[in-house]
Image (cartoon, rainbow, N blue to C red; front, top):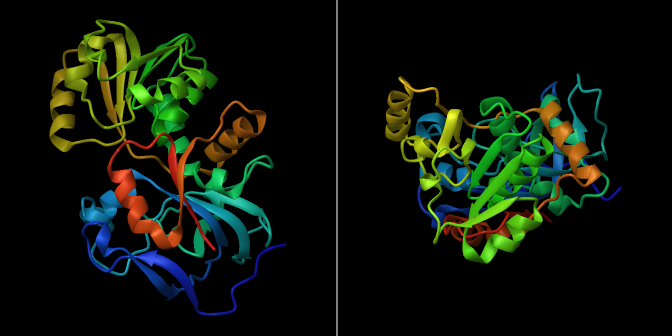
Length: 325
């Protein structure tokens, strides 16, 4: 096996010691974490950058993430088990695993990271570490948005806003896997062929087509880009339509809830939950070829600041992956 159980106290990691722009990110030594009874220690081979990572770094979520520093960002882990806690029986050193850490900040952008054994899953055999590192947060978000919050039914007409992004590219594929009758993807002109290749039945160029004018067309609108609102999208929804967003603006959510009071249409705002069972389902789809990862660009972990800046531009097609030496 090409891994080593850590015998030293320090590891290389990306971290920040204050909230702020990408310039606050540093790369250097941090303590190697020690797994608790129900945790596994993963030798990280790949991770990724998600919008939530730079929002945490900016301090946008500091009421949740708090004011203790340093903080190691990163919500996607893919690598090999280096050590297991006393109560862990599912995993052994050397196993290829991936998952989403459940500590609120992340911790994945480092040589070693912790995963609760309940939220980890085995990496599908056909996936590389880089591909696996692009999956957990995006795929869990898309699955839970469509299955749990939108309660997608067979035959539903589904619109994915931001269909070429990390979450959106997963959502197009997962909507089809869950039995959607028609999937419409909204993206920029450069990514229309990509979204079609993911299985979208219709693709709309957001520069030329305003989906909110598609009166009573959709059962579900999933705003994976965080650039719409229930109020703006309401008329595009059919009776009993569901609007879901993962990047809620508090004022927009309040307005949406108010607008939904006397309507059969509903608005749902959520953040993805770590789930080993959901990730196992996603793994089965990946192994079967029902889902495929989309990677826009890969950076070494040492260049995390540049990766954050690129992600903040909002133009990535699929995920931005970080490789870890």
